[in-house]
Amino acid sequence: MAAHFFLTHAGNTPDFTTIAAHCSSAHAEMRLSCHFISLSTPAMAAFMSCALALLAAPAMRPLGAANRLLLDYCVSRRHGRIEAGCRASVSRSVVGRRQYKSERPPSGRKGDTAAGLSLRDFIRRAPGNGVGAAGGTDQEAPPYLCGVGVSGSGRRVYFETYGCQMNVNDTEIAWSILQKNGYVKTSNCTEADVVLLVTCSVREKAEQTIWNRLKQLASLKSKRTKSQVPLKIGILGCMAERLKEEILEKEKLVDVIAGPDSYRDLPRLLTVAEAGQKAVNVLLSLDETYADVMPVQINSDTKSAFISVMRGCNNMCSYCIVPFTRGRERSRPISSIVQEIGMLSDQVLQIIQERANICKQIHLPAQSGSTAILKAMRRGYTREAYLELVEHIRRIIPGVSLSSDFIAGFCDETEDDHLQTISLLRQVRFNMGYLFAYSMRKKTHSYHRLQDNVPAVVKQHRLEELITVFREEAAKLNSELIGTEQLVLVEGASKRSKLELCGRSDGNIKVIFPNVEVPCDWSSRMLAPVGTGDYISVQITSASSQSLKGIPICHTTLNSSAKMISKQLQAVNSGQ
Image (cartoon, rainbow, N blue to C red; front, side, top):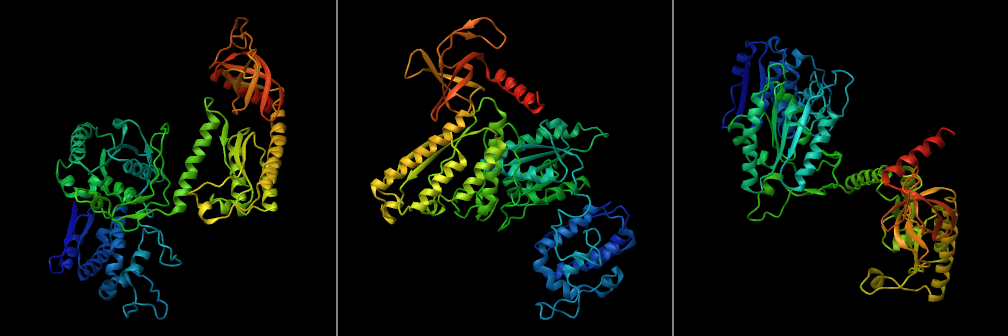
């Protein structure tokens, strides 16, 4: 048996005493579902008295965890509005029956009342909230993240995304939340226990697509056998907020409806749906940005990613539904955006490391080794941050080749600033560099706000020093490659001699070698000429700061070279 109370404010307070008496004598398997719709403060206070008494009654002890979570959640969302009314209305008999201990608020606290306990005390101490009556904590976890029964328990979820890039990002947010709560993603709709459609309401055609898809899912739902977990269907996003009533009534196929600002509540909503109830949360928020939720890509092989920097819209264009489906405009914290970009950057670095068809070289412009000059240049980072980034890159991609840009003699650059740039060159050791003396450009910030006050002769002298140090360190780096075999992509004839060919190593370093026929592979005796676009294995025999020279060994491919390098590394690691 299920009792669904839709409580609306009709000018009078509902007779909750009668409801409680009816429910207390009902079957022990009763489930209580409370939907608060514009309920007045006195009515809410009266309901809370009834509900708490109801939960204390012997007949209601078998209430499932989902019902407790539902009550806690609904109350917590309305807490700010009803607390004062509840303090004045909650019966002392309820307090005594549940044996709650009173916590006297600090002296002078706003809202002190002779009644003692407030709604916060009931919610904080309610069994199932994870906080006992004694020795509790003042930190209240969100009700959809605490308590029993919100784990996905390995249930398989399938996502379909419709509409704009924001919906792609919403899908990744929803999946991140569900993944942390024990759900498993599946790419096959027929294998799913939960199907979630992330919807769009910008145009009527987009909505019609969803209605048609729901009819298709109806067939899938009806084919589930009794031995299988019942299929649950959810509508997320803009359409969920705009057409919530129609979605619930039409076809009666949808079990969960979650608006754009209620994805955190998905674990609880799905738990409620598992208990056989319809679960809805389409409340719009003034501050929800999901700043602390790191999106997880649905397709690990995707070649692009979307980073959300704001939600909602305030423009109210006469033709647009977005402000009504996504709420007011609010920006995501910069720190959260930077964190997500950093995560995506790490993914890019991992891909560079893993993929043989991507050159192991990164261009990382420094411009200066002085934090003071970097600030004047408005670069947005310090010397220390740059060095930390270099260390991070080299940790993920061992042996990576780095190139950089440097400017000598920028506005107000001192001799100490210049020496700091020299020390950065020596510390990082770049394989390639692009170094120039500063020349002021019209319309730039420095043109209008700074003075080009470093004499030209000083600029030139500092540039020559930078070039000298760069070449010294690059020559040392390249010399470490002598004796190794390098994969080279042939670019064509060398500029200095038609008898030689030129190409690029995996670190994008120029490699020069004789233009002769070489074996077709490592084990072949058949020779073949070398042409532009071929991959050649070259043994390095000499090096300078600008290039490498070597002897071509054989033709190869990306895959063959990667396997050979892997074997060599295994041999080195095993001490052979």
